Amino acid sequence: MTPPAYIHPSAIVDEGAEIGPGVKIWHFTHVLKGTCIGEGSNLGQNVMVGPNVRVGARVKVQNNVSIYEGVTLEDEVFCGPSCVFTNVLTPRAFVERKAEFAPTLVKRGATIGANATIVCGVTIGRYAMVGAGAVVTRDVRDHALVLGNPARQRGWVSRTGEVLRGNLVCPRTGERYRESRGGLVLLEGSP
Image (tube, rainbow, N blue to C red):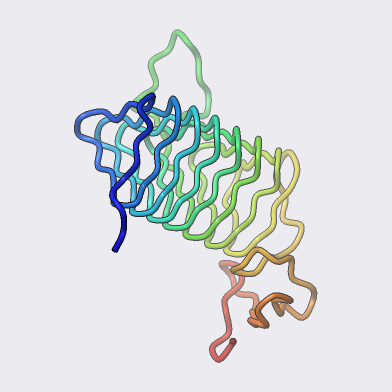
């Protein structure tokens, strides 16, 4: 049985937000209206989510992250401390651009490293890994490892986050992959 959600007394959850069972919301975090946080997710200290954001199940958001309208995190995404999501390409303090929010999708199992920046309008593929401090300015393929500014693909990672060598076999699980147009796909019959 999944325990009820835990919301620290210093956190604020606006009316109209949906919090799934087993969710943990820590110190000084704010969940805005229209936001849905999936079962078993964990929002660290000083996190802001919303409004109208979808966070999947078993997502881990580390401290000091803001997830703005237009961002969707699928199940089991990991957001490292102080990673940054943008919501417009050319912000100005004196120009209202809420109608220009570009959607950003982070697919299942992806990892975003500490202090990485995700420019709005991109899709980060399933089980991809964005290195710490990287600046993602274009789509990232499934299982891709991207590093740098701007982020460039430097290799592949398995579903469990292991860097893959040329044979595309996960050293942790023995799972075998093959390259496809969208990234890597797990071969049937893999352990």
